[in-house]
Length: 286
Image (cartoon, rainbow, N blue to C red; front, top):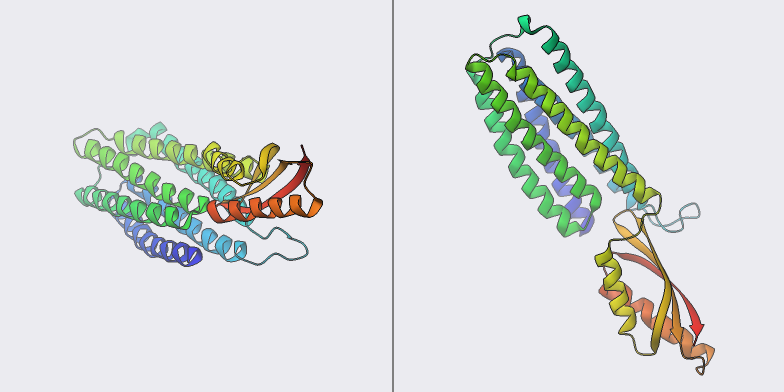
């Protein structure tokens, strides 16, 4: 179910970004709008990102093996980091191109009106794509899909900036078009840096969110026979979480009874906390 939702939303993004890239680049070249051309390259980076997501989804769903006993879920984290780096590079390239144009402002052409309609059309399409992808990401509970959805939202924001720049150019303020391209480049780079940093932290065993931890703690303490716990640790594995904890159980119980309580804790956590991939327990007699 999760994989089907992820694939369906990503393929929808592939189709939309293919059409947007073609339209924006062509209209950008014909109308003389650098801002629209930069936005088209941004859509192209989205298309590349979509294929990276599809590859990551394929590999992350593989069953555990000898080399990956916990599964392949961290392929999602690696793909998110790649997407972030890609966005930083695309943003830097767009910004540099705009700076060069600003240094030679005398050659900035007056853009055609069709560039404005193309920018408004792209804005509407990208905002709709963002809302659809974010809803799918929440249903699939995938951080990778959330990152890709916000990538689409950054496109919508950049299209708005481009539209403002084109309006300024049409009104006689020619510098506004490359300035819009510069702002888009900076925006894309900032978002990419955030994605890359978050993915890097997940690969470096970042803990789960406090909300996830609180959910696990509530289930543990509600299990009959548990008197307390300590050394609760969590780490991210793709969009899921690995948990290990020391359970405090009465020392008057037999080993078998203590073991049964620990198994019950694990089962209850797995049942009530869907983001938990595995719970490792250690029994401490109290």
